[in-house]
Length: 226
Image (cartoon, rainbow, N blue to C red; front, side, top):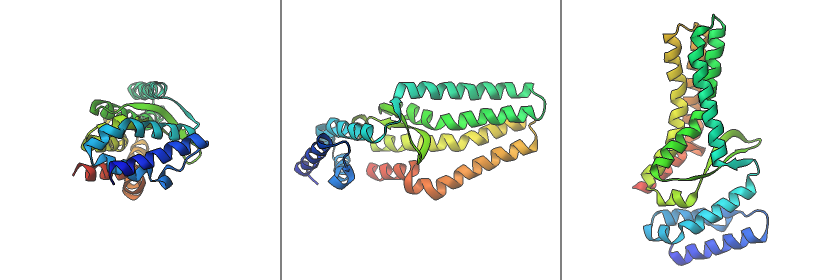
């Protein structure tokens, strides 16, 4: 696909967005054009901003439950801090409250570290983020929307590790807390819960994420890096 074909597709996407509340970008060839742009630095320089605008407008029309990224990140940081405080306080309680507070802290960290890892690794690579969002009811977990122009300007290998970082953080969290739980003498049932959560998350990644989520995107961008 050359620049003329990319131009034609982007024109069609912009017309469709201007004409109605929603646009089927995939049907218009938008993502095929994006894939072609990724392979050519000259096309990235020419079309990154335009692609970013189209992607952002389509996203905001399709996802009503969203806030600016800064607000969502503030909530995530606050949640992570709550988790850390709960873990620090857990040894002060007698059983079974020690285990209950411990697991509450682990849950807070597990729910927040995924997107925080995306943000930290992405920001270091030069990727910006525009929105925090949830897609109800299909994807109630929080997400971060990338600014696609900055995403395209970032090297493919860095984009890949940005995607992988969230999955890695989520998988590490239960096992880090498990080590801490052992150190503070938590009862066996709490240790088993943490172990089960960790193993379940790994199985979920193996069965689903490689086909539809972070690891799929990681593999896509690593292929682009080659």
